[in-house]
Amino acid sequence: MPPRNAARLYPLVLLLLAFVAFPLYWMASTSLKPQTEVFRVPPTFVPETWTLRHYVELFWLTDFGLLFVNSLKVCLVSTGLALVVGSLGAYALARFRVRGKEAYGRLVLLAYMFPGALLVIPLLLLFRQLGLTNSHLGLSLAYLTFAVPFVMWVMRDFFASVPVDLEEAALIDGASRLGALWDVVLPQAVPGLIATGIFAFLFAWNEYLFALILISDESLRTLPPGMMRFVSTTDTNWGLIMAASTLATLPMALAFGLIQRYLVTGLGAGGVKG
Amino acid sequence: MANVRIERLHKEFRGAGGIVHALADLTLDIADGEFISLVGPSGCGKTTALRIIAGLETPTSGRILFDGRDITRLEPRDRNIAMVFQSYALYPHMTVRQNLEYGLRKRGAPRDERARKVAAIAAMLRIEPMLDRRPLQLSGGQRQRVALGRALIRDPEVFLLDEPLSNLDAKLRVHMRAELAALHQKVRTTMVYVTHDQLEAMTLSDRIVVMNHGVMQQVGRPEEIYSRPANRFVAEFIGTPSMNMIEGQVRTEAGRPLFTGPGITVVLPRDAPQALPSSGRATLGIRPEHVSLVAPDAPGAIPARVTVSELAGPERFHFVAVEGGSIIVRTPAATVLHPGETVALGFDPDRLHLFDGTGEDAPALR
Image 1 (cartoon, rainbow over the protein chains, first blue to last red):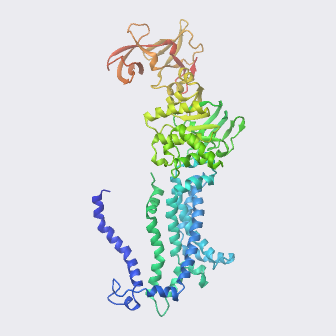
Image 2 (image 1 turned 30 degrees about the vertical axis):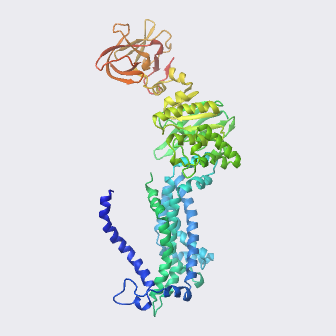
Image 3 (image 1 turned 60 degrees about the vertical axis):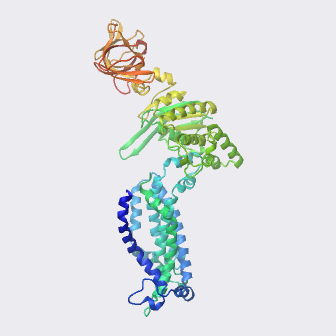
């Protein structure tokens, strides 16, 4: 698109940006206001009094640190597993001549679209038998129900866009199938792995329902259900919730900022490379 | 180095449109150190044959032997072959050096051996200044050299090349063709070369295999293929411009075989094929360089009218219309003809090709 037309789009972009960014700004600014200013009418858009009290309370009076570490553990494990399992599956779907491959590919998409709310009770019953409730590994495995189909669906196009010649050259040069995948195909698919990895991580990081139902031990709680305890029947500490939310958002925002470049090539490359 | 024996090779592909026979009953012996080309139009099975030798495809039936060892079921990495791809298939995330030594690394060669071989190959192919660059920073010719180097560095028993020159521009292609020929002189490894360009096949090969529809049409030395094509397909495929083909009848008159086509009567030489087609239908073939311009009253002169004249450097191609169609005549550049001009053609009687019938695969009569 010529720059002249692009300039005309800026107002629209700004409007959209305001729509998306304002809640984030409101969250951050609320977390920095004292409790009395939080409820003031009319509201203050820029805090009159700046305070870090909510952040201090968060670490001294709640187990935010523990929740954060728990979340990090579960999300890292589930993302790692999803990338390994999903990539291998996607590679097979992209490359091998298998009977019913297309049908299987569509089933993967269906599995991804299946609502989690319908899965959680059967999963709970199953996990109880297997002793996987109240376990970070169990929760990570539960997250694979949506993370693996997602990785498979996206990485399949990525692998399909890597020229077959490269792999065949590696096979002739003395690599095994897995060796060729590791040495030659995966390095081409790094942008895709980063993009899908981030999304898989994000889904898990924000996930509430599975975390609430599969984990009942307070010391094992993850962030989303853990933060709900800041809401009580008598009092909701908005400053505290906003401080926790800000800190929970921060790592993701940072990650997106750092890998933005990959993300754009990544999501674009799968479908229309070259 | 090794000789290669291809034994009754069949390959079928099952697709939505039913079974496709990519390769039918290919048997071929390739001598140790020989440069052999598989040539034919796209879809003729040449690439399938190469991929089966490489181990990238499994044949439906048949065997491949290197020096008598059956390698049909071996993985590509267990065959000690090297291959150059049409797209070069250089690993884009590795430097030229890493590309070159990847195969050695995979076979566990120690560091000093790798360094020594990379240096030797780089010197031979004149790519030393580019060793630390990535493939994307190289020109087409340089990439081509790196691809050759990556194949050569492992001292393979058999060297497979799949249309390695077709991505280069015309000038570079001629240059790399000469380099490739010199390279084969130097390393003397068995080379199997796939191309759709008959000129490449003619200039490079010890022997040529012409293929069509998965079937081997003829195998022989380039001059043999050119001067004694086994059937009409080979005759038309090899040579530019193509051999002129005239369809007509053959009969014997006063003890001499006679070919008659639309507006053309040609007395065939005495040693012309004794066994004439029973149907009487035949195709007469003659290469453009064996058609000459003669005086209109010369015996057997064929009247024709010039339609187009093309100058191709040292020579000219004249497209002339005869009663039954169009004929191409090749002359020195000094022979100037103008469109519309009337000329008379004479066929060199010793260079006539006669094919039994008029089909694409009509066999040559000898």
